[in-house]
Length: 327
Image: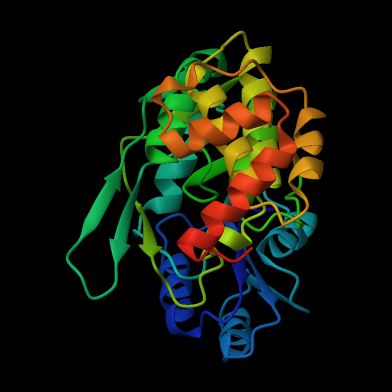
C-alpha cells in the first residue's frame, strides 16, 4: 500500500544534525509515511547515516547522487514519492513528536489542498527562539489568503518557507523546483503551487523547529553574489499571481523596484546600460512614489527612469570606489 505522506529530505554534509531529525521522524506518533533521503554528494559521513536508517526501518529510502544543489535533490525526491501528500523537512531542523499527525488531520477532516503550520526559529547554544505564527486559523479560501499574502510574506516569510507544509501530491504532480535558483527557490516553487489551490488549512501549532545559522547552510550568500535579476523575476511572479487574483498592492511594487535598484547597483562595470535594457524588457508595473526611498536609491532609480545610462555608470563607479566595493 502506498503511504499517506511522503517526507522528502535533501541531505548535504549534515552529519552533525542528521541522526537527530531521522530519530524524530522514526518516532512520530503518525506511522503511515515514507521518508525519502536524497544524499546530494555528501562527504562528511551523512551518507553512512542515511544507509543505517534504511537498514533499520523500511519506511526510510535513500538515493545517493552527485552534488547538484538542494532544488535538484528535492526534485529527485518528488520524482519517486508515492504518498498522497508531500512534506519537506530540512536535514538540520527538528520536529515535535506529533508533527505529522497534526499536519495530516485536517486533510481527513476537510480535504484541504494544503496544510500550513507555524514554526519556531531557534539557535544552537542559545536560549533565543522566535515563534512564526500562521496568519489565519482553520480552512481559508485561497482568494482570502491572497488579500494579505504579500504583507504576511514580507513580515514572516511563512508562505515561502519550504517546510512546515503538507501538500496534495496530485496538485503538485507536475511542479518542480528550479535548480538554477540559489536563493528563494522555495518561494519561487510555491508561487507556482498557490494558484492551483482552492484553500489552505492553517494550524495554530508550532511543531516545526527551524534551526538558524546551521553548518553548511545553503542560504548563506554574499550580497554581491546574489543573482538579483532572478530575485526581481520572483517578485514579478508574486505580483502577477496577485494581479490575476484581483489583488494589487504597493508593497510588492516597491519590492520590485528595490530589486531593480539592486540589479543596477551590482551590475558589472561596463554592463549598466545592458542591465537596464534587460530590465526594461520585463514589462514592470508602474513605479510607486519613490520619495520614501533612501537618497542613494532614489538617485539611481531616477537616472534609470530617465535612461541616463552613461551618467548612471559613472555615478556607480564613483560610489563603489569611495566605499571600496568591488564588483
